[in-house]
Each structure stands twice: as C-alpha cells, then as structure tokens.
Image 1 (cartoon, helix red, strand yellow):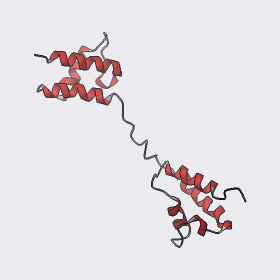
Image 2 (cartoon, helix red, strand yellow):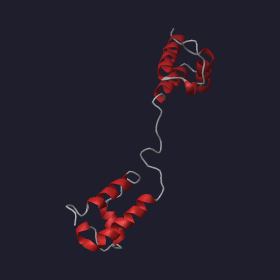
Image 3 (cartoon, rainbow, N blue to C red):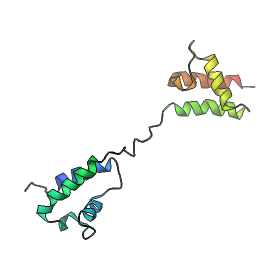
Image 4 (cartoon, one colour):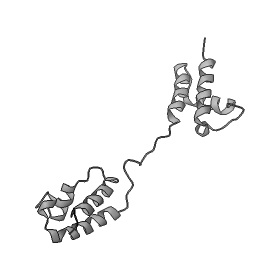
Length: 133
C-alpha cells in the first residue's frame, strides 16, 4: 500500500470542498458506511478503493463553485460613490447615470457601467465639484 493510504481520499475531499466548503471526511465516511462510522480508520483497507470511487462520483457531479458564484466588480465602489454624491444632494440614481453618460470624461462618453476605474474616479471628482457651494 502507499505511504499514506488516505492521500487519494483527502485529495478528492479537497476537490469537493471547492464546490461545497462544508464537506468533510466525516461526512464522506458516514455516507459510505450508512452512518455506522465517522473515521477513515474505521473503514477497512480493501474498502478505501470503493470509498474513493464514491467520492469521484460526488466530485464529478456538476455544480458551480460557491466561492465564485458572484464575483463583484471592483468598480462598484466608485459607481456607488458617484451615486451617493448625487443622492446626498437630492438627486436620483438616474440623474447620476445621466450626468456621467452625457458629460463623459477625458473626451470619452460611455455607458455608466462601461467606464474604467480611472474614469470613474475622475467622474466622482467632477461630481463633487458640481455640488460644492
């Protein structure tokens, strides 16, 4: 047998944890032994192969990773800052978007969600100056 007979088992569990961070070896053993055992040591050496096959089937089940289900756009904070400037001065979100889309920055006019980070920074500065007393 290999130096660590559980290496493949733990590698499969680690792979499954990318999709289900709560999944542990205890859950795997419970599922494999129908709740009779909770430790890999309790599984017979000749049964480890079948446990790994079960884990491969679990790992092959298509599902989206929970961690990457929603990746936030780093420019959202800057967009929210511009909207906050307008809202604090009695304007609406639509006013903020319309201002950015009609005025543009660096001679370029784009949709509100299409501006780069630097352009949004400049639009925030322009917005602050717009409402200064």
